[in-house]
Amino acid sequence: MTLLQNSRGLGSLNSMLGDGLRSLDITEAEHGTAVRHYTALGETFSDHWDLTRGDNVITPQGSFALGTVVRNIHRNDEIDLDAVAIRDIDKTSISQAELKTDAGIPVATYARSSSSGYPTVTECERCWTLHWANMHLDLLPAIPNREPLESGILITDKEVREWLRSDPTGYADWFRAQMREALTAALEAKSMQIDEVPEWQIKTTLQQTVQALKRHRDIYFSDHLEDRPASIILTTLAARAYTGGDDLYEVLRSVTNQMRFLMEHRNGTWWLANPVRQEENFADSWAKHPERAEWFFRWAEDVANDFDGLGVKSGLDHTVPLLASAFGDRVAKAASFGYASAVNNARSTQQLHVASGGTLVAAATAAETSRKARSHGFAGGSTN
Image 1 (spheres, rainbow, N blue to C red):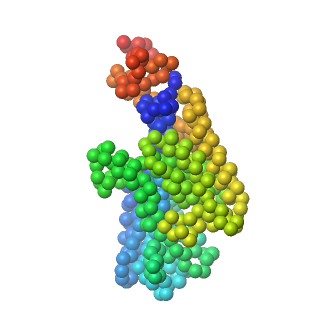
Image 2 (tube, rainbow, N blue to C red):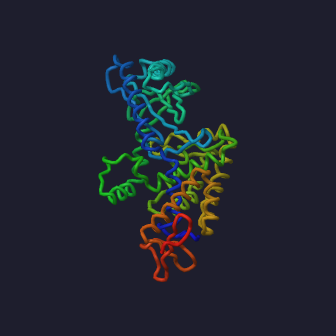
Image 3 (cartoon, one colour):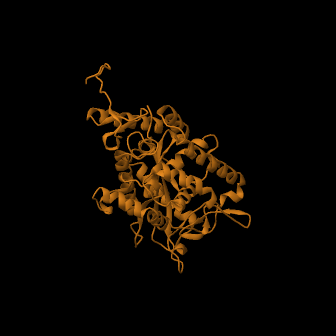
């Protein structure tokens, strides 16, 4: 059966992409579990830092804060979450190593508690990671950046002697600003206020585009994950290229055809500035690993071609295999199931029509020349 490639209606690329990408989202149950872990960890850190006066805080960051979480295909589709634990003290009162070691104590305490689900704990260069069966949480120790004319936080790093500057809250504010108009329109369409709806329940085309890019990247680089571009690079490029719009497929095409041209080349070094800290280069590792730049530009061209190719031909036999190739079986199956459910629902409510050429359309988009599709019983016989 033919798909409507240029419509947001039944069987359109937008509806199939949307259904497919939603399969990568964090579910309501997973969201509740993540919130419980954040809350319990915060209480454990609060008890541990009880003698530290000030605003000690643990807060989500990264994709969970931005609404761009996707399942890691190379880790059996588990959820990757990030948080930062900020101890409200001056950098002169503690070293990086001391802060990192100290933060590991409440992490271990929580991991031993019965309410934690007993995750395993590992130490990384900058963070502590708690691993559960279907998700893991990277917790980054930090302190406030109180240097003159500065904001944000200072974070630890095993390989760097000086404190590293970061501003995840500022970055999240910038990202939300890039999609504020689209998010407001989506919420107004549901007659709801922004502060009444968790961001993970309402997705703009920018958030969905970032999810699509991350999933495509993970499949493309499945044999050499160390060369894949960092999520912060994809997120920043997508947000910079984004001009709004509720047509997901067109946004995907527009962003992927622009983003590789948004990388700067400064004095022989590839550069992508942090939008809230212009002196920070998100692509700084490319100087030490030049092959990563080569891989990025190769992938960026291929992902643009892949998304362009989705709209070349219509039909489930064309679209579903391309979705599987670009995003994996999970997305392709969800897209197919969403299409089948929409068709069955339209048929059961007598809203399904067949336009000229054999295209299925719902009543709202049916052409004058369309005819009603015959409904069928369980064994395939007509019930009309």
